[in-house]
Length: 84
Image 1 (cartoon, rainbow, N blue to C red):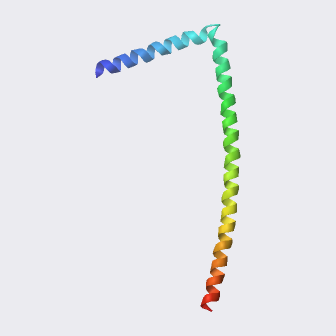
Image 2: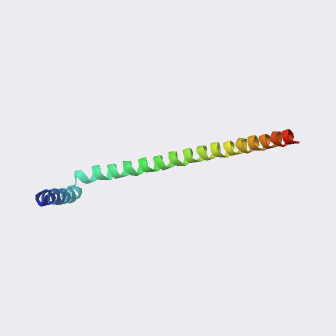
Image 3: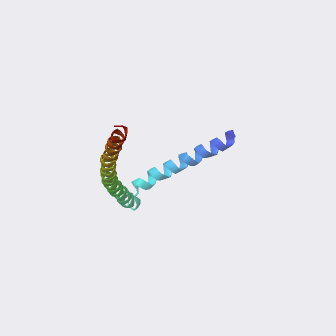
C-alpha cells in the first residue's frame, strides 16, 4: 500500500515537472494559451446559457404560481358557495 502511494506521488511529481518545462517551450506555450482562451470562451458561453435558462425557469415558476393561486381561490369560492 505504501509502495502504491510512492508510485502515485512520483508519477504526479514527474508530470508536474514535465508540464513546467513544456509550458516554457516556445512550441507548446502558444498551444497552451489557445487552450486556455478556448476554455474561458466555453465558460463564458456556459454561464450565458445558464443565466438564460434560469430566467426561463423563473418565468415558468411565476406563471405556475399565478395559475395555481387562481385555481385555489376559485376552489375556495366554490366551497364557500356549497356550504352557504
